Image (tube, one colour):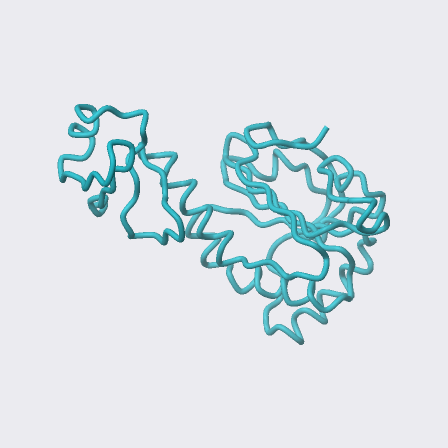
Length: 212
């Protein structure tokens, strides 16, 4: 059965570039992003891992721990690290699972046999501090991921976890949001005393007050 949003992310223990990793224990009370790569020493994967390393300040700011995976042995990961640092200008600063037996890949449905039975697709799982899966993305091996969009979605998840709002199309942090339809106007007045613009009764746009 495929994993779904809201499920607890399956726990596992697997070797990584930072030693044996017990997933739930490693995640602790942080958010996490688990993302797979088709194969070591391939061009698109090399650029992606370098980008995730470059974005370390952004992950840290949001309390997110990145965790990569490919179905290659640990020794190959350690050799590949040098290529990533030399070609992308950023050393790996997060663990990379050595899932040579494909145990984690199969647990998370990262191998799609009709695409290629020997490698993982570019799967992305965003997992919250309660260990629940909050976002699932699947890219084909030929298309590199947009990690700016993944960060944007994490911003939306973290905002909407704390506020009774949703984020509209192409939303960026700091832009107006939409009041949840579950709130009546009376409830909304208590929560959003700054007022809002009602385009329709179900479409109420509000600018959130900056956090002091």
